[in-house]
Length: 224
Image 1 (cartoon, rainbow, N blue to C red):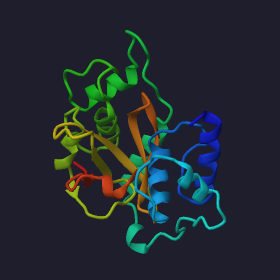
Image 2 (spheres, rainbow, N blue to C red):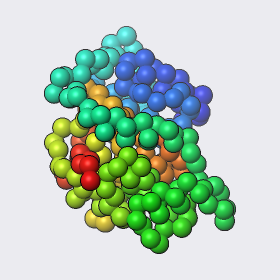
Image 3 (cartoon, rainbow, N blue to C red):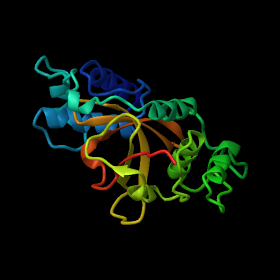
Image 4 (cartoon, one colour):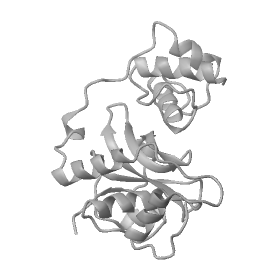
């Protein structure tokens, strides 16, 4: 879709409560997840393809809003240390890789602080490096790995997402690689808003479906 059409699409999804990002015309992860959530709620195929049926349904008077009341089971109190972790992550929203041979020193620092001794660049996938850097800055242990799936053995496994928890999703069909993020908000439509690194080469908010999180990929950080 053209950028102006994507903006209109995002605006409508946001008005109905499915999209929680910026109206920026970027048909990325947040828009994709919101599209799937909307289509699922309306009995359409749960994929991010936007065709005539999806557009007609979205802009019809019959379009249903996402539930706005989050069940209490999805809103437990956030531990103060997790509040600090979320504040640390929010501080870096907007930080970007530097194209070319020069590296963003903050991304390099996160890797070093996390004990990833070989880390010296911002070219390799750095989602896990960012999460580890934020954890260490707040007194939590690091996985000492640049692999997103290293978090599948981290902290305490939980079954219900909460703000401050870590989520890991697969990357394609690879059993080794994945993507890791910090959950900021939990929504009643089955999605979470997350803060993550290495998305569009930067730290930003994204939306993911809870069902996409790996079985052992929902983890609660435990202080060292």
